[in-house]
Image (cartoon, one colour):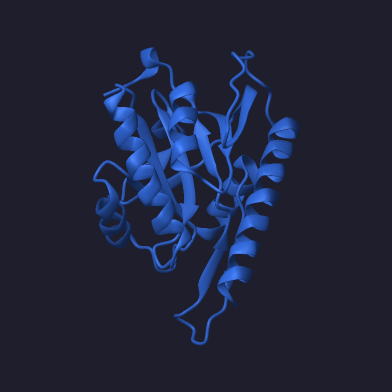
Length: 214
């Protein structure tokens, strides 16, 4: 598959995931109280945050990562896999800078890299991968069925794309960022193309200073 075709496919997946996630949220989850509208340059802020259904995955230390892991802080979930050639490392590099700039403002953002390639992305590999970008980043994965179920609920998709050998497959996946508020609810979707000069102001609007955590 050519680079342009791969990028186009990823963009389509991101668009489909956003639409599916928002539609699923409307159908399955009761909205919480409306929050103050926020205009974003890089995506959509949900005026009525949506609950994240119960889930249980494993983080890069082998510990349980579930709904409780998303409460009490602002989080952003990015879906990918460690063998990703470009989109994943580029996005994580971008989030590294966003994370640092938010810290300079006294605001904390938990960055969660959700691997959809559990066959290869074991905890030790995930830990080394996210640590390269920032030691505070968390790598998470789980059984394929659990990843698919969560994706249907919060709005991401992925599929395995065969390569020239059994071990050289790749994963097509959504490239959007899913923003979770301190109540563990979906607060916003940020969609490609992701740009630093848009993401930093957007996160600054989303995360009030009084909600910052250390």
